[in-house]
Image (tube, rainbow over the protein chains, first blue to last red):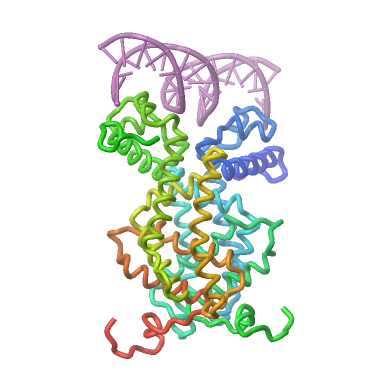
Length: 214
Length: 214
DNA sequence: GTCTATAAGCGGATAGAC
DNA sequence: GTCTATCCGCTTATAGAC
């Protein structure tokens, strides 16, 4: 799969990936034709097969690439040695920020799971599990220290990830809220959902405004 | 669209709906052919057109029907005159219970939005907004009374719905947890996310077990 | 209301010239 | 590495017999 970076071929492959990602996100894998992808890149359909073996191979490439990038980015962003509450907040903010700037890839990775052939599905699913395990680790740690009031770590992890990933279905960079504001809202909610009362931010509203700066 | 109930035609139409729903959920609208649906019902492809004008018409029928049933069911289940916290808990439990028994319809209604033709999309989107407005109403009421510590009602509503609907992606009736248990977990989380500290259930774990019955 | 047959076209993928 | 041309199966939808 790897090719000499900088070669013309690798550049074209990148263009194909981008065009396919955008088209898959907009219309769905099954509804997008190879001719359509090729036209977007300025090629004939046959030329795509110099870069990807099949249409399925493009999908696999996009989804595996997305998951690997996600896991690697979290490994870089992960705070080491932090308390569970701080680690959870870091995870929440990372997840929202990372996903918001990759709406197409998130959408495709979620919606097109069923269009992956079995072997490819297993590969992607294993990566998804690896990522989810990062959150489960934080939750387990916080339960042990008594920071989190939770019973069922796997279910809580899925619930939090579903909530956070939902942002990508409505977020627009031109929208009413900035990513930082959205992070704040979801951080308060996700921390609250594991039993941590919010002591800043939103609570000010409830206490009838203490005239503090945001 | 309406036909005499009890007629052979209506029965066939119901079979077609069921077959299409199952196939769309499993493989996706674009990947399912009319022949495939027909075969599942024991018909030839042409016969489907006695019941639905187009393939798109089947999808529209399924999605509009799902949303209308959802709204109607909530109108029946909705507690009138309850406090916001009780109303929110009722909504959470209703949403999970209703959706868990309709995994295919939920999946299709979420995943196939982009395969709706514009006019059909607007129709379904309007129904989705009507349902979401029910939750927004509860949240707005609870913010006014001070029961909920939230700032942004629309965002909180979307976050809660995303979390709750996520259940359908992993719930299996043969799984480890019953629906009642799942309801309990998500109720604690969703109430916590709007700033209501959990005083029962999960908190017992944290307080090192008071030897009370579950 | 269902059947068979067919229209008219698009799908993924390949072959071979350049 | 890209092109043109092509294979051939499958697509939605329609027509007309029964």
